[in-house]
Length: 309
Image (tube, rainbow, N blue to C red; front, top):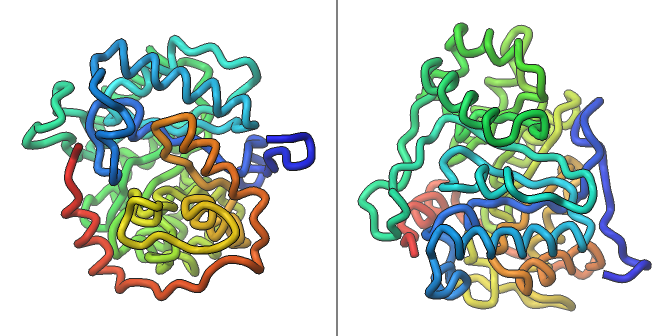
């Protein structure tokens, strides 16, 4: 980036930290397999722990050089938190992480099950201690990973009480065709502990938009994940976008153009893809292509069929 197109910043919700508008998510960098289209080509043959650590650190360093100051991890992202624990950024960076899924693939790409969901109090207590051991006071945001109405967490007063006592900002991430309903249920909790929401929003699946706008209006931070639809909106996916920039930059620019969005996450696993993603900050919103969204159920069915590579 040049001095004329520096990364814009914003406040993550009312009273939250100042962060870059584009953040870096570590789902594709913390473990050897993920569901992004082309992930195997991105990470190459060296998927050892040390090889993935070196890759993650290189992309993290590139992110800071590009002005990115928000990084998002999770307990289920393999060794993402461990990679962050021995990374020393050149500038202050806000770190977010999540609990609620346990990584079970044992560093195998072809594992039958990669992660197991459990939103119980016991899981929170175990994973919060694990995160604290690795990130300590560097943690700025702690999120429920993929809260849904059927997981029961939004009615579990024991869990909600420990979240209310958290010393860091508390949020939740949501997934699936019922994202909007989950967000609205979380907003309606009396004395809700949540101050931030992370949701999927992209030009193929914008259905959470109105609920995210309500969360933004309530003072919550809003983080968008999967802006590239797990690679489907890139040049190697089935829905590449055409316009005055790369397909991935156009897709991210479409997210940045939404008035309710604070941060959009890049899920890049290479420095080159990260630089291309960051090109979104100079895309003219008036030049964005028009895309017909998919039905949410069809979109999420397609996502669930993507291969781990």
